[in-house]
Length: 474
Image 1 (spheres, rainbow, N blue to C red):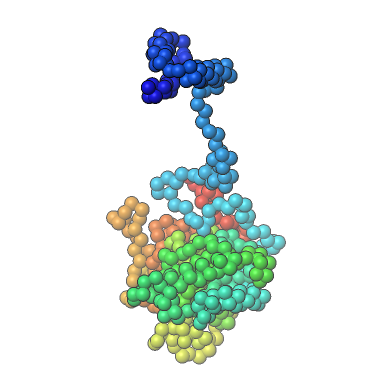
Image 2: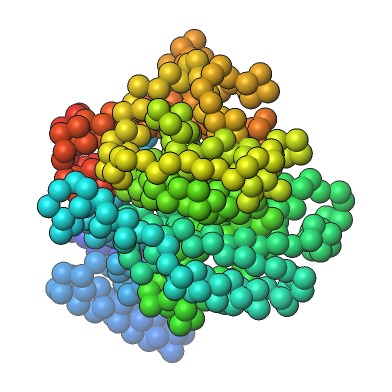
């Protein structure tokens, strides 16, 4: 019987244990009954097979090896990538209610406070002004960068135009430089040329077209060697932050830039600062000082709810208009060089402004700015540089109400700042409860330090959420 010539030996390994000898004897007897009818050849092969199996099992028991051994893992499965291990070990859990400002997260290499050679506060301020004042060399580099970007985008957007603005001396490093770059690149494209590239051919909103065009431009630049850093789509004008590679031979080091599509804020900011410098050089110096202070202290990253550098510039203009006995700047409505950028009916034709230069030094103006806004009546007064006088809030300006962290039951009037180029827009509407507290905290800190004639290095010490100040407060 051919079917009886097969012997099932799958249970033999378990039967070889001493505790199973009786069962093993029964199994051997059953096997003999099964193989007796076999011929001599089949019997020999069956016995040889049983002996070989017994020898293998005995050898494994003598070497202490298990009956079945798992396959070893491959080197890829054994070793976890070093980068993954580092990310896991450095990862810290965030507790509920913890606010972390991406503009001021601790860097791998600590950012040190700037050092100055001056002996007095005024000497240090003048030294810093000389360091941060935009230079012609920086603007030429930005112009070359704008042309390089235009060439890279011409294949995808043939009618593209690119304009660049340098807001500081690019040869010097900055704290939080990647979060708030000193270079603005504005890409001008026709909406219809962007609409033809949309996946859906339906009618798209202007803001959707703006975002889609920004993604197209960013993808093209990244494929050309630029490094992507972050995107900021929460504001009124979407933008992305890229890192210019040093391989382009435009700058000696990698320079962070903000790119936007059909944006007007960089143009308005540059025009405002330029005209302020023409009317009163002290005003441009103070604007650059305040922007640098706000950047180093981590309170000008707009996507996180802070006031943008452009809004800090407006605060400086308003302070110079109303805080002194004699205004150091006229109303923006009388800025003749930018009246064409103002809304219809807002610009005024006036005689060239003949304001007197202030007898106050740059350090004294810096102290006055901090004192002015440290006690500013935000609940009853709005910052309106267009008319340049103190008074109640304009009815056309929407009031910004900030909800406390405990919910809508506790509210507070936030900063109300009029955009001179769009008077119905409140530039303070993006502030949150946390960013509002941070701004007031930094104004109070700066006011206290300057009243004590503390070094400018201490005033500009880069802020960090895990810095010594935060640790002592907690």
